[in-house]
View 1 (cartoon, rainbow, N blue to C red):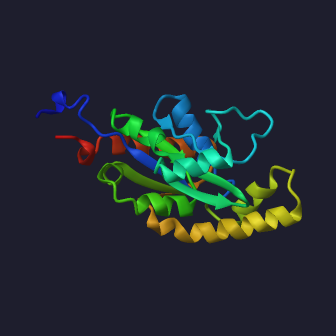
View 2: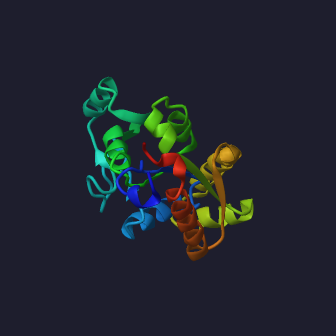
Amino acid sequence: MTPQSLSGNRLGMLLLVSGPSGSGKTTLCRRAADTDLASYATSCTTRAARPGEVHGTDYFFLSTDEFKEKISNDDLLEYAEVHGNFYGTLKSEIFTHIEAGRDVVMDIDVQGADQIRNCDDPLIQQALVELFVMPDSEEELLARLTGRGTDSDEIIATRMKNSLEEMQHWDKYTYCLLSTDRETDYKKFQSILISEALSVSRILD
């Protein structure tokens, strides 16, 4: 097999992107999808849609019974219950793309990343790359959490606590991106996607 013959024989990459609230991980993933650099894996949830959210774009909004049926049918790559609502990733959102050689990005919390990291499916293990995005200081993190101006001090304190706990998991990931500004972050994000796309580890025999 020569490099010229590899088109169509490559397994797509699955790039997990984690980071604390305000790190910009979702923006990075969405921008990569908007520029056709990768496909974005849309999660499913049982929570109600918020104003402006679109089914199939922001989330797949499912009833609790529908979600539990997908658990029973082993249709989910990972899932969790958070504050009374279920969240998860459909296997179809991942396998359809990576088997066709298309790269997939997904923003996911550290617990979900652990589930996928421990998945014994050989295709997932071959496709998997992980990135942790975090601000370069606690002061910057707090500034980002308070920058919205819509959350109470109590909510900000809770998010800050949760974010600091999440940041303890950075060393489990393939890459760690210290966030500075959106354009610099995206250039680094692009570099990871482009370099990993050249990896021979995902070339199929």
